Length: 415
Image (cartoon, rainbow, N blue to C red; front, side, top):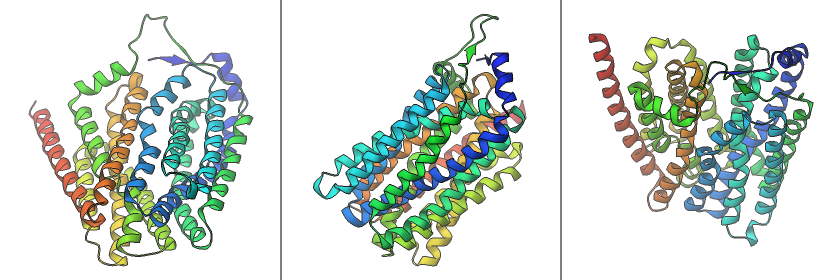
């Protein structure tokens, strides 16, 4: 779908040189906000396991946190093309601030409330949080010059990865010296700069469709149809969705392993979570060394290695093996996820790439089902056994995908 900015408005935005003045401030504020958000993510899982002591409650809380990704990425993208993006993102962040405050109040009074209240408020908060990435990505070309977009995306991803490394360590230390409530208040305060910086955005014109050449094919139905008709994209989406269910719930279940199996404290949990995040950062950096010709061939192997390390995690017998396996798991799982995104980007026409990528990105909502399913099983079986089971099933799915892609490549070579 061809979409264009009004030329005069585009020139006005460029004249303001937002890429040199606004974006660095936005980046710093986003890092502070991400630091608080990742602290809460780490602290909440540990708090549920340590205070409530229920794998079932942990599963429901993280289900509520991730399930909005099923639909809110589509909702955010839909309204980003039809509303003033400045007002839209301010409205979304306003909702995020309000629900973060509600989350503090609920956890503060959790001893007098049923756990379903925390599930509800976590769900409400992440309705807004899941809509934000689609709007932000649609907003980026309006606030950064075209030649600087790739650099801006790289800086933003790096800031999030750095926050993911430092936040768990900080959360683990703070939980060892205080309750979770002050930490949640710190998270709320860290979101304030991200909210206030948005008011420095200029008014941004609404993008309009170019219909001068007649009607154009558009909509998610067309994008889904395109994926279905492409063997490579169809198989890649199926494998990505499958491993979102079998592989990626491991992070939410990590507090159960650290506390119930290894009997470690909050500080150790923070360091272990940071180790997994460091592996993910390294995986993102290594992706640039993989050529386009090798993406399809290596991708299922990355999934198989990820599932193999997940299988080994169930047999980790000491802290050293736990750290080594969790690092390797973070590395390979990030390589798998990033490579899958690259395959879609390289095999999709420009005019429908945004919609096709939205379909793929929504696969992260499947993680919520995996978390709920496997934490319910963990209530009856050991978390180590469940990790090994997840790894075995995921490995078999990757092997089947590799055989399918091998057959496709052989046919293409013959033709």
